[in-house]
Image (cartoon, rainbow, N blue to C red):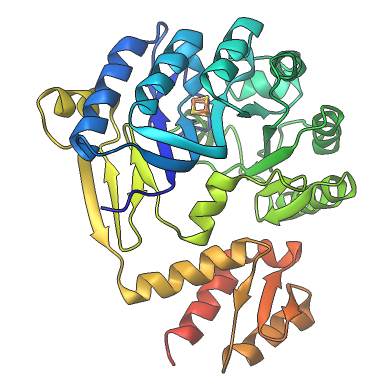
Amino acid sequence: MVHPRHLYVHVPFCARRCAYCDFSIAVRRVVPHEEYVASLQRELVQRFGDDEPWTLDTLYFGGGTPSRLGPEGVSSMLSLLRRRITLAPGAEVTLEANPEDVTDEAVAAWAEAGINRLSLGSQSFDDRVLAWMHRSHDAAAIPRAVEAARRAGIENFSLDLIFALPEGVERSWETDVARALELEPSHLSLYGLTIEPHTPMSRWQRRGELTESADDRYEFEFLHAHDALSAAGLEHYEVSNFGRPGRHSRHNSAYWLGVPYAGLGPSSHEFDGHHRRWNVAAYVEWMRRLGEGHDPIEESEELTSDNRVAEQVYLSLRTLGGLAVNGPEIARVSVWVESGWARWVAPDRVVLTPLGWLRLDALAADLTLVRSHY
Ligand code: SF4
């Protein structure tokens, strides 16, 4: 087996569920980090046996809220993994963190253990909005976290922001973008709010207490972020992501390039270039199966050639790398270019503009249809 150069580890713990969140999480007041790391060890041994350590270019701890593991939990998780993997020189090692967890003590221990990039779940700088979303931190915690990270030598950090909040929620998106820029992040990820089933927000919607954001608010905020962040030197390199030169997310870029990656932890996904597999989502079930010596896999699938075509079109159009087109696709894409949705970066390579990214799903489906018919 050739081991992937990229590994994702899902850490499911959260202090409470945010009102919009439908991720696979385990709400715990006290995080059982020893129990979690012991299960991770079982999965590592079960999946990769006694193989020689293999080399990673990127390692990403996502969740959930991996920072809830605290200084000790993150350190023991990394020392467990380092028995099986070697980090390539300059490897990117990211920890998703909520601002209130980034104390001087914690971030110093994470940096010592090998974390060199933080992805901070900030979402907004407005306390009313944070409370409305049921976030567990206030706005003041965000600059405090950034300062602590810098004191520990972690300059490479990303901020997450949520836009397109429902009608009736007072929020100045322009102020939030400006406050984020004041912190001089190396990276920003934007998420347009969608109301997912089985979330507290979907219940509020059913009770008529909120209405999803209108398309024009979504479009205005997306385009404003593009203009403001680009003007500040952050490249809009993927539909939802902005980075300074040399600070694009290398881990997420691997997903968009369609290269193999491994996954550990509940609900983690893995791709070997031909097959995709994913683990059971529930933490307790993942742990139970590993404790009984069973594979925690939920399902797997082999990508068909149609799947591959659709994925390649969709993933390529997401990024500034763009998509090579030929034959009858050229005429179709020329219409997009005339509409301001795309631009040619070479005679046979197209990249979507921000206006095109607002129509990403429709354009990708349109081109997939053309591509699968010749
Ligand atoms: S912290 Fe993140 S993963 Fe946890 S509930 Fe909130 S949005 Fe979901």
